[in-house]
Image (cartoon, rainbow, N blue to C red; front, side, top):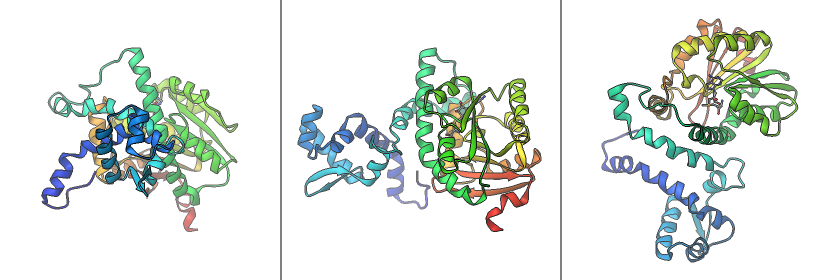
Length: 344
Ligand SMILES: C[S@@+](CC[C@H](N)C(=O)[O-])C[C@H]1O[C@@H](n2cnc3c(N)ncnc32)[C@H](O)[C@@H]1O
């Protein structure tokens, strides 16, 4: 996604054909080419042979993958580029292969932006049959966890100078717990609590749980249920994380959510809203439209609106941290000192 910077036809053409790059990326993986190259098939002919593909067409496709930078050729032998080694190789801890499978489920709603403009947000969000719901949930959570493998490292690196050596971290809307696992690996003296819907908590518990990680199944939209959860943890958390959660809901739900979340903080605890923000960059602005077509009432907020919401719930001090891969973190606390420990 590149913002328009001039009136060049090259810019127009790149925008027009933007979708083609996604299909190339997805097919490079789906066809088995990425796996086969990694396993040692290092010519187009060998690839066509082992994957049962047409030789000429495979040659042209592979040429394009090289031009694009997904594959590279050295001494006439094909290999994965550093980009593919990082994001497409099964062996990489940062591989994003489930995300490639999830994205096509989202494209259908993007094709119907016009329906939303005519009928309003929520027009495309219909209840799904159980099977489809579970398949979608699985891919959604897996792709979130893949993105988290990169984003959590960026977030925890940026927050490192502000964190005390031990405490309790409460992750609300924790997904499969990727942020918490990465956090506890860095900070083994902290304890982590993953709060999410019961269906999702079951998925967390199916994976290896580090000793310091517990789960808190809870529907945060159910005021009674969420109040009971937060009351049990009132004033105990040194860190409350809401990562990519506020964009799922409207301002009213988020006001209530932040009020409860703030109550769980210790007096100098930090609340971290990690998200895409409308005023951050084109990615954040585009994500707002993504929420418009794909959710009932989700939206991307500006970092300024988010800071104001946090101040309304008594977290009078806020600070903005910009991260390398489009997302930002708005930090909030009752304590000015806690927000600026790195400057002491
Ligand atoms: C967009 S995902 C973000 C996951 C993770 N925090 C991350 O940044 O990758 C939003 C998470 O919030 C959870 N969530 C959404 N609505 C919820 C609710 N009403 N109660 C509890 N959890 C909820 C979802 O199940 C999902 O795991």
